[in-house]
Image 1: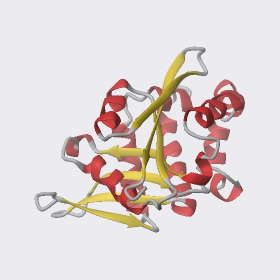
Image 2: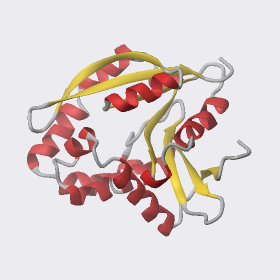
Image 3: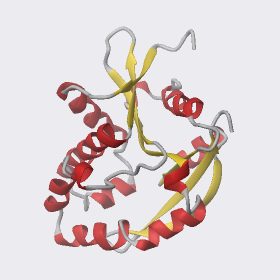
Image 4: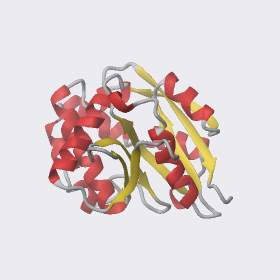
Length: 220
């Protein structure tokens, strides 16, 4: 990593300017994500509140990993990881950090999709089957990873994953899901084990293929 031009850090509390910067990186990095389009009901103005709620919840219950440019301190990428026993929007304390407001801003149709489909038993059942019925208890789960497009293809995402891989205890695994074929190829190249896919209905009655992966921690 001698030629790696970025500093990797765990951030307990982002400043407001860093939070704004991180939200914009997510918006730019997930511009073609079918899942984000479904989660916002196609409303681009809700992408910022969605990512802001995710990051703030992760600051409370998970761990925010960032890569900053050595020369400028600008955030180049970030990853939102939840350790074993923790999940995104698990309780009111997390949901009150922007998620409830985001949910209230959705159209009734998209809000119903969140409650009955996305957060419902169908996807949860698939994830438990594809990964493990004990995923929450045994996994470091990657909810979001994003690199600003102008800094991509420089090993940032790989190193943000390796940070957690090296910290995972002997009983832990890394787990994640993705919605694009490009990312499937990336995670396979990083030696994640492909666990299967499931069609997730969208609010518009289309389908997104959700692909699941796991990888043992470095010392397993």
